[in-house]
Length: 199
View 1 (tube, helix red, strand yellow):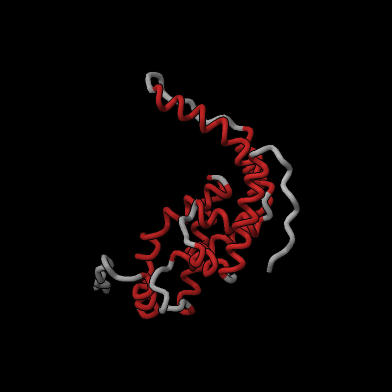
View 2: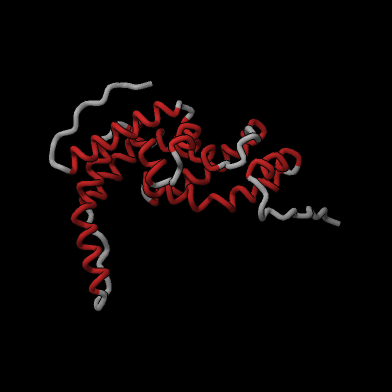
């Protein structure tokens, strides 16, 4: 007779508690996967495109599973930890990310259905801003772009981004400020200034 693992409820249980439980019962880690896979996949798809997102998202959870015994359970929310892993994996694909941004800046948005005037107007407006925005993102150094996109697309706070990247809060604020400055300069038509390293 096959052994049946009794699944404990995960509603209202912190990520840290689930990860700690997974040290003894590895199947418990599936709850972390279920909670965050689509967020991590979406972030990877925005950064690298759909062709690499599946692999990067899957690898993120493989790495997390392998490292779960080193997770700091005093941190109840595992999102910064997972976003840190995915950001490191994306960094390995920085050339692919730059190609993705260049391709996106040249690609028109999908056409809206007929009869949806508001959607059409919104898409035209989005298209007008999309190409310059994507081109500006490609100009930002990857360490600064990581911070900007963890905050803007990942929805992390500055402190969570610092935790995800293993840097100080001051470094996050500096990189975020510089990335925004480059975006503003690029979107206003001025050439962005060079960014010096900030540690």
